Image (cartoon, rainbow, N blue to C red; front, top):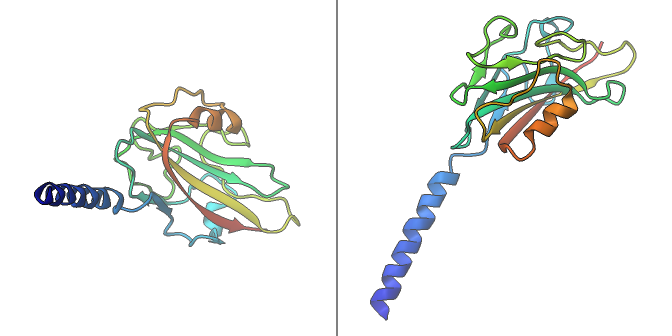
Amino acid sequence: MGKRCFVFFVLLFVFLAAQEVAFGQGALEISSPAFKHKGGIPDKYAKGSFSIPLSWKNVPQGTKSLALSIVDIHPVAQSWVHWLVINIPPRTNSLEEGASRKKMPSGAMELKNSWGDIGYGGPEPPPGSGEHSYVITIYALNVEKLDLKPNTPLYKFEKALKGKVVGSASITGMYSR
């Protein structure tokens, strides 16, 4: 009985050590070299289509594609969409500044923002409405492709993600006029 217990505990230790390696990689993270979480978004990324630089790491194993959203959650904005991107290849780990409409990864598809334009639309809160929070989220998905049309609204984008997200991470940038 003693030898069996020893073997059992050795196998248990090996199994738990393997789990620690798998989970020790850390959770999915997103960041921007342009601002810190809850920091101010620089003016050069506002009032236009010159997109924010973003990078992410620790994409979960088994991820088949990525999606991205930037949404103004201020009550006045009512979930104003600034950028929706789907079908980003899983090995992609960043979008350089100004990538929207110009230097997107092969296969990635930009959807319409709340202004009705395809791609990124920078912060442009109404004067006098105070500081707005722009939530930037990267989603790791268990499907290779989301079959959405360019004019897909936010609620349908969110509905398409249901049951497909294997990890996500967000940062928030602040902006006011």
